[in-house]
Image (cartoon, rainbow, N blue to C red; front, side, top):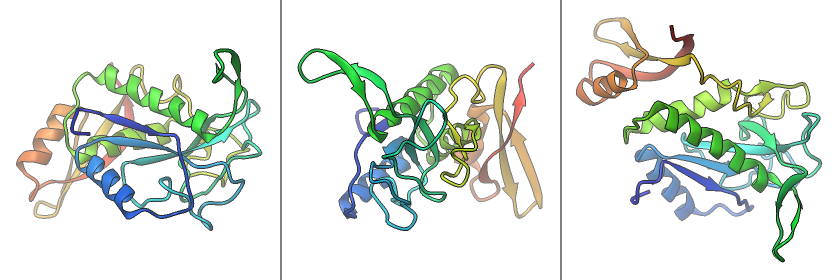
Length: 219
């Protein structure tokens, strides 16, 4: 984080809650860094039986399950309506093996980098990136909003769908950021990340940032 990371990919999972791990992710959150985590390969509902770091209650985490080519939950993948955000390809992934050859891999650890890569493309497109927590939260919301709905993922994750880097709001579609002012009793909207960051930093007592309200076509 201190070396300038904007996205961290954590292709790992375990049953043990580690306080230091959560503290590190919270620090990343405070620096505006998105953390993409694997949901795990235990064939279970992690809302009922948590796995970590996917189930840490930190707002910059995106938890990823593994899907099949037919948009179903892979037989090994964990799921959870509250603790898995979306699915990504995680079965039959072409990769290098430890012996210098090529093979097919599977696992939520393979699915997670697809989401991290899509997030990286988003940052590259936006150009600027300000080190405030809301930027990581916005990027998380963008990934979830753009997931391609599929019946096989319904009830298995928050988005009910699979990562769709092409369909996720990107080309010609921009987020509209919303603020609320209790003293004024009014909302304020902007499509400009720089303006969002300026308001957040300059008038935090007057304007409370609420996140992405919706997406709009840029003309």
